Length: 220
Image 1 (cartoon, rainbow, N blue to C red):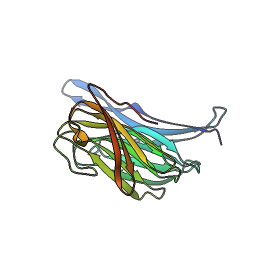
Image 2 (image 1 turned 135 degrees about the horizontal axis):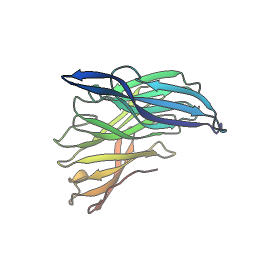
Image 3 (image 1 turned 180 degrees about the horizontal axis):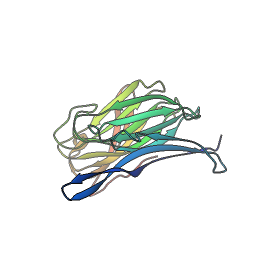
Image 4 (image 1 turned 90 degrees about the vertical axis):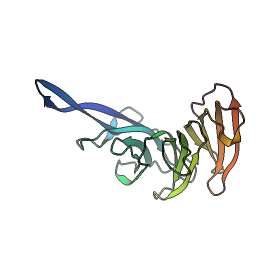
């Protein structure tokens, strides 16, 4: 193990001002960043994402694979698009994938499996991996280490679904957890926390739900 530390986040920065009548209004921009530190806390490199592009970029998660490649996910306010970037251990960008709908899309969690496939979970008001049913739907998307999509699945009912967390096991099964106030998986009682187990080839293997006013936050 290299014992390096990787951190991601975003910064709000003033980029100028605009005059509206008698008033001067400051203008701000959010840009995302990734920083690598060694085990002694020394900064090795920093990568700014979207700085100066007149858009807002938000980083929401980071993961590292078996070869010390770094995967960073976030979103931009340009059409609410979600992005996934891969960097090598020296901070050089290897590829970037941008996806989303024309509606509001959000991402919450990211994980990497033993084969260096990367998975992201979130929610959407559009079609992102399945049939949109007219409310907020949860989703999970997977890419291999070359940036090719290998999984896209949407969890939908007549209610609101959110996918707060995603994890994988040693057999490359994917576990997604979230909340729903509808009848997801034909659950007779709406308003539940849920966990779904997916196989990247065959789709949903099984699911679990708890009745009541529960909310699942994350999984590991």
